[in-house]
Amino acid sequence: MNQINQDLLQISVLPRNSINCYIADGILFDSGIQCGYKKIRKAFDKNPIHTHVLTHAHADHQGCSARICSELNVPLLCHKEEVQKAETGFVVADYPSPSGMIAKLQQKYWAGAGYPVTQILQNGDVIGDFEVIETPGHTAEHLSFYRERDGTLIIGDALCNMNLLTTVVGLQLPPSLFTSNQNQNIQSLQKLNTLHPKIICFGHGPVLMNRKNEFEKFIDSLKS
Image (cartoon, rainbow, N blue to C red; front, side):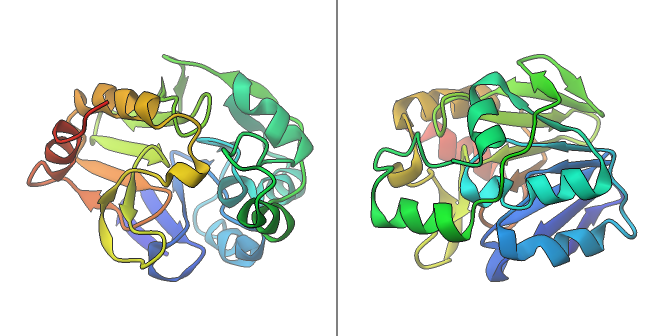
């Protein structure tokens, strides 16, 4: 676990920040994969939560959601386009190759059970101190969350800060193998670019303290 600031905790469920979830404002953002449950659950001892939200319902983001929500009796929130995956637990349907071996392995070993969604989130909603921003592309309606008071951006998989094969740190687009529409994803990143975030929290890779505008420079280099 990595305490980024007084009200932002990073939980890496695999080494080298490979799969992350976060606690802020009493909210759990994403829930990693099945095997990360004990590590996530331990974080609640000092960082209690009252709500669980998903940036999107892929296997490495909803793996512990059902167990956490049922055991702690907390609501599950996501975008309407993610509800079917979140509630059924079948989370690879929108992969470009849903019948491929990687998708099958993720569905079997990473994905968690489905759980009823309590509330739908859409662009402009506020959860805690975070504004909900629709950032489609990686999935049909991926969500990001922005807290203006300290410039924290929880970006899910709209952008990664590591190579998922080598684990080498660096800003990267999410792999096309798991991304529904990369051009649309780039357009979403260009929208986020206008926020000029100070702290960027990724589903994959270490948190970026954006002191040298690395985020803006990377996005400015992209072509949609």
